[in-house]
Length: 246
Image (cartoon, rainbow, N blue to C red):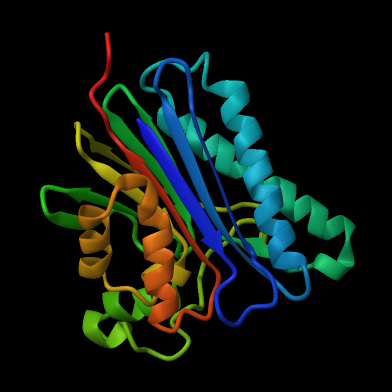
């Protein structure tokens, strides 16, 4: 497995409220996290920091003894822990009341990609000249699309399309979405914040992934988002599935 990631403050924000982490375990299990914080002052930055810390701690503590078939329960447990950490901090610190963060987490083991997410940070699979969005945004605009009130094309330019309907830390409990996808050698998984997916079309993301050396792709994606006028924080985390060595 190969890992590459980068984050950028963007062209407008005064601070970067995105955060990401990733690691490869000795057994070639790989996990990755992208969080996009929200909240006034430094609250969004703090929320994404708390979430990534909690998720990383959960992964490091629980992955080595995790049995096959327990991945869903484990990932949902980790999300619950992160949600609780943010919510508790906000209750104890009124200045940070209402802070929250998106989260998209991936876990690859035994040739299966497991994904859990809350909010509009996304996971994509790039394979064989195609790009597939693996997550469904928890957002107002996505609800309008599903209700048939606007088209997918209209959603790309809809006002306030960054308004999300779920986030970690805002409520005492949160319901995350979980999905799995078999993976094979050559697959590239992209986790990103909406600072990338909101301004760079999927086809352009795929082209950058395919036409650049792997470890330069996060930088190229961020450059393209900035070129497209990306004002938000931008984060791209990539995982490439390689042939397992005996």
